[in-house]
Image (cartoon, rainbow, N blue to C red; front, side, top):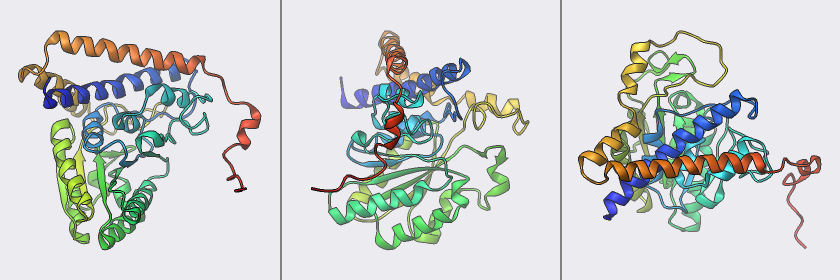
Length: 324
């Protein structure tokens, strides 16, 4: 198996993991086993996986409120993530983080947050640390079109540009901030053009094409590692579901618009390409899909069977222990 074929099959596997992991989470939510808000990324798996796979395992990654997929894209095990969603002790954050605060340091996932735009300075800080330690790592920050209007966007890109920090800012422009179209809230057609104000590269990429995203981010990562500083990449993508599960229905987009974007499903597009380029047979893909389905089922079973935290666990990880 060639390296290119291995890479593309792994991309396909990770995208499927994200899609089916979140579908399982939605089922758990509907059954009352998973409580709280649930923001799913169906439709955005291409830009997530394409960007994450341009990194090494040790590189840093910062997500946002719609971030079940980002740790998976970075290579995190789904069992600990699903256990975290169900609030179990075996979760990646011992059941204390939940859906919007997943972190897995073992794969460089520094965490995610429900505060729009708050991950940008975290990513810049991680990049500053990498530069000071000279460890060769880069930092990748995912944020949405709405976050590009936050003050933290300007502050983070400005200081990253001044100090030439090894960070890639990746805007997931799915067209909407909850129900407001980006066209009504963003003054420029392409958010990537805002890079011009900081003297850094700005690139627009098709977020539904996992390979295009991978190539674009790979160039930005190489630039960051050689000390040339940050880049801003805008992935034009789309979320198939509403902002979050449970929100009251609002007619803010047409059925025709959603249907069009579903013809550009990143998972389907890569599957077709694998078959067209003869890099995988239908049997190969079906076997991989069966494996992913089993892995997602195993993650759900693991989470359900895991113990819930005890009341005294609330006091752990609150204060640092004094050095003796």
